[in-house]
Length: 429
Ligand code: HEM
Image (tube, rainbow, N blue to C red; front, side):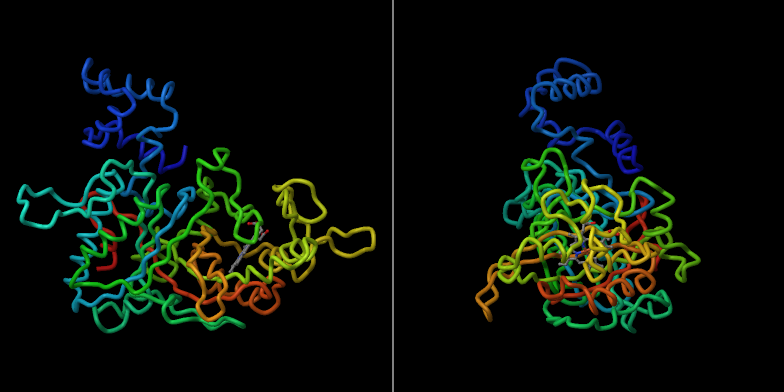
């Protein structure tokens, strides 16, 4: 059982029931049982009742990802169906205001992760409601809210210049990218993921509301993967080019792999980042129309995998090992050396944890074509030892470059997790 699930079960057992829990039980017929027995006994009875009769409503433990913990949720948490990514610029001056912002955000994020409203409801009808309300009656939907600091937070505004990890800075420019300022940067990045878009949007909206006077939104991008409703088996999602995307990723259940690939350590250069992780975000537009006119063979050679099965070229099944030295009967490598997989893999010594989502943003007014692609997100211990060399290689020679264009870019130092009583970012101040 993963650390998150373990925490989650513990917290469910200790936690008093919220109004939402009661409503949900009522909706599934569990309330009668609850009222008939002791609260705890009734809750277990209701749980088993729900499992047999109302499989569509997830149990509270499946539906909540604990907010507090050693690491922030949303990094090694299995990807939810939707993302609403928000980058903020801080307008407040001084470290005190910034700390207060993180404190308020922490309280709100922890409440929303439990499916609660933000703040105490007021009985004064002449005031605006404390919570914007669009998630009332919805389950927490495995909401996670992951906060990170951008390199610009370490300028001279908040006295944090000396705290910037030496290897944390803006990315270098990469071959072929055409970055648009409206999709780049940010003092703070917040990755909000949930199995319901309305729940994710609600979280971003309330964080922006809470930030009023202290921070403003710089850019927001929504994204999606296939939903658990559409694919209850949870197989690898396909990207908008039709290929399974996310097959090869380090094992999030292996603490050893995560320590090697994802979690920063105190002696990596910044003690306050110990247990945190560095995030790279790239908004990558796909030239869908061009892709749709290319042959299946070209498409498969572009990735080095079969479209239908997701198997590496020359192999049978999706999870068969990728063998870059395997040759066909003519002596040519099955997987072209300039395919995406061959280049991204290299000799296998560099790994990153990918956690990307598709996006679609209407049409590009300049071309009249769909503005759709991949909101690429990866987590790593060191951006410049992992993401940067990999992307440099891809930017130079990847066959995929004919069909994509990097238009947005940001990096964030995602804080370690907060413990109850503390707040996100407290190790920094
Ligand atoms: C729109 C842009 C991109 C698309 C459509 C895309 C798609 C894919 C697909 C279909 C695969 C094969 C299946 C899998 O293992 O998940 C893959 C693998 C991979 N991609 Fe990408 N990718 C994109 C951008 C990137 C970027 C920017 C990076 C990193 C800088 C990256 C790193 C990787 C890695 C590390 C693998 C696994 C390689 C292996 O060891 O087999 N990708 N990608």
